[in-house]
Image (cartoon, rainbow, N blue to C red):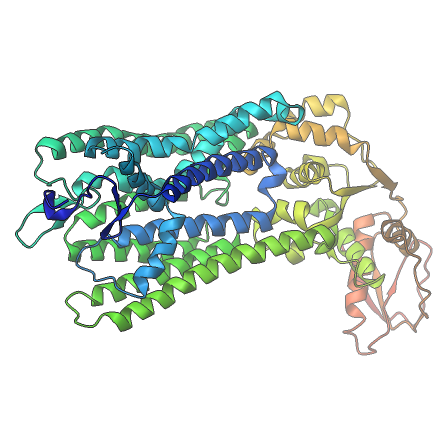
Length: 609
């Protein structure tokens, strides 16, 4: 339309397509309807998945969590690229411009641009176009989850799904597309400079940025609509700083699961990183309105600060997500620096090729990370990393657990057992080892094991994840009765801290009642190597091999025969000494209650207890 400013509008019967006006066709309407259906169905399926994994076991499938975080970072990266593209003095050119189109598909930008097809039906005013882009399109993302929740509430399996899950889905979507939503609300303040000094909006080229008439109306509309992302940010701050500590003190795991989009992405104690990332995204969105040099300075420092803080604190629950986040921030910073070099550059193509390489590296890293995590999850369905998980109270059964692990390994390499002192390097991953990597959960039931916070958490997770469980009942262990269960929070007040991991008192009570129904093997109070071998045989369903008895050395180990842990310590020490004493391959003699001291016992190791 030559009558519009800078020929920015199309004549009736035409629609904008890049820098051109193309005829309206029937396929355009079909594409718009298909896109709307995709949003409706996609968000509905997302809500169903989140609702079905609302139980805490879904939160600790570490492989699935890693894949979800990689996809989340891919969409965030796409939105950051769209914001970087808005810096005017950077000359983005081929092949990087074509590469950016891929990221526009992953962000809301392509969906917002598809609204232009409505101009084929009727001429849309800038004010209506602004409302459609910033209110109606985001609101369409709430229809699918609402319909899915209503349908789930009408069928049998949905009765366990509360409407609080709908809040979780809305929060997840808002957090996922927070950058695009904030970016669209500052549309009236992002303007292009023309050679004659005039300013027009980047998203509505026929509107002059003069704070009068249509532009003033859009500014007022933007100032009202932007209260939505600001309210979301303030609400997140209130939930994390005020409400969350209160709910943790009363072990309200249902609240933790409802706010999992804020809490469960990061390790316990690092939830405030959610606010840090939200504030970073808001500042990132505002930078294109600054002068080019200022925007480049702010963007560069934000990306550098993100990479350094994530590398130092490692806040993500998944190590894969932490590594990928550092890589993505570094690659984005490289793209930004190379883009800055194109300012007033007569031949920016070599730099654009490098930008494309960095962008491809981001996509490759994120998609590879997501695929690797999914393959890990699928593989864990067929073969677990550990055949056994030995849950024990260290004070009462650390040596017995060590001896049990050594005896299991002697029965075969396939009987690998998880022992926290050997395998646990990150406490936040403890429960994921139980739910995802363990074939059989073994509870060494000493008298006070159920009063230990972490041991009880492992039992709860084994119950929720439906892991095969065996209880080795030690002498003086009393199975939990109803009085113990009802008064558990009074007896073990620190159990409330597990609510940060999504484990509430209801789950604890259910697990304690379930514990009396699982397979249980008694452990004799009279410690002997034969009794340990019999226990290992019950766990592995194997028969011990008859190994030839080697000569004993002059070394002997003496421990209290009536102290099971002391005797287990002596056995473990003897196994380690076998390869260390001068007569290699010969084992020291371990005194039992019936042993006699001989003249060959010239070196005595005393285990004090």
